[in-house]
Image (cartoon, rainbow, N blue to C red; front, side, top):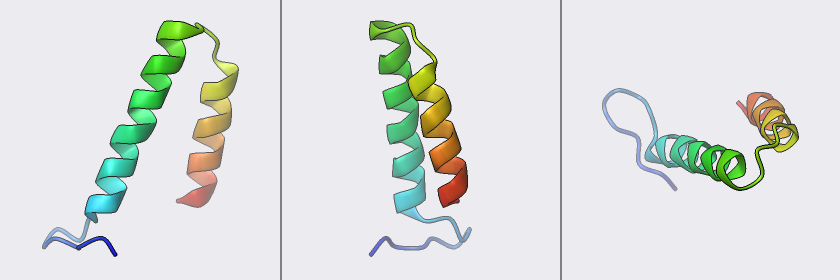
Length: 48
């Protein structure tokens, strides 16, 4: 389980956000398409 710091934000959420950002950057760099980005953002919003 991810540890919760005093701010109430979890390390897991922080790392997950970093991972999503990296995936989106790679997606833009290698494909230039935004379909995957929209799908990821929608899925991520539903999970939150």
